[in-house]
Length: 472
Ligand code: UD1
Ligand code: MG
Image (cartoon, rainbow, N blue to C red; front, side, top):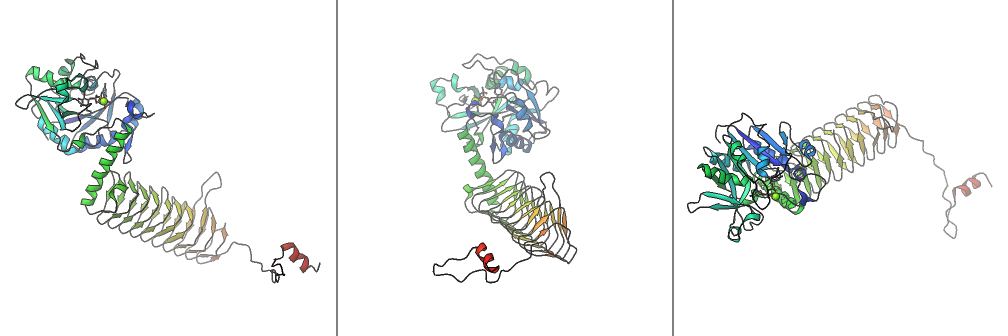
């Protein structure tokens, strides 16, 4: 990369009508990330110091999807790609160096490729990224002279049948020297089949000046796959999924069926992680060494410590320590923290709670707004009643406490360290350290209630029993 500054300009003003969507095309997601964000990440990774987007259709929605620090300029007359670039003129006043132009709907471009394109542009007026493809229809075709120099880019709609036979296409990605760019852009007209101001005409403008046009051909043409329809959205998503998964497998992750594993580009996986089918690792998740995920697990923006096992569960905005056990079929909601060696077993829901080191919530429980100390056992069916219909209240369970099965902890309430709660209790008052808390109806046994069965095998009703006791 040259030492000169490189600014990225991402075109995203188009309507994307073929998506047949209420939302703008560039905010449709692949692997949970809006298309335009992936493009922004790629140009930043390529070394661009400043990123500008051209917005138009549903501009506000597009702007909201952009990472902080990315500027946008509104394009009023959307009359072609040359006009789109010209829209940035005011915002880029006084800048020099190079301008890297990319599209908001092309999320597969590798930063290395973009860096190379800037390199080949060095001391040239422009460089074009091209690709050789089997089916060039719809794309601009690259025309070269006998020496291989680019002499023009012909749009599909303007091409002769001979030109339509060219398989080298214009990806629409360029690098321009900022010096002279704005004057050149103003020389582009709209005398063509679509009456649009074509950015591709820059090739002719440069050549008319005697300025050289450089080019770079993609080794991997899939990098230039863009999204114009839902089918292409699925294709691009599958390509990105393959690329991300191949990278992690190369880093020592086992995927039992890589087609059924989705890892977001922003997530990190440790070595010897094993991922079973139908598992999603999304947003910014971090998975430690030796973790086992899945089958059927969804991790959203969460951290999992080394050696933990999560099976058939959903984990959102949570932090799981080392050597924890979660699932099957549990749901850790935002704000859940499991300290090391904690266990959350089958069909447990936890929200905004801390579970202490070595503590266990093995079966069928709900804990919300709860702080559980270390080495606590929470019996099956325990529920924190943390909501009175208006407010949420906290529950605290001290270190080493034992909560009997089917306990209702009516918050706000505190169970002291080392305390025991009898099974089936409804606990409404604090329980002191090491005390036994009981809150349940006493058992009544009705001796002889079950009658000796008559010839018809009938068991007597409650009323019949009472009448008999009264001597009726
Ligand atoms: C363009 C290229 C074509 C290339 C193809 C690759 C031109 C004239 N043609 O064609 O050679 O093979 O890309 O995909 O450039 N946009 C704006 N404002 C506008 C017009 C377009 O922001 O006024 C944006 C669109 O949102 C889109 C991108 O620019 O992201 C490309 O525009 P589009 O009109 O779709 O160009 P193509 O016909 O695809
Ligand atoms: Mg198009």
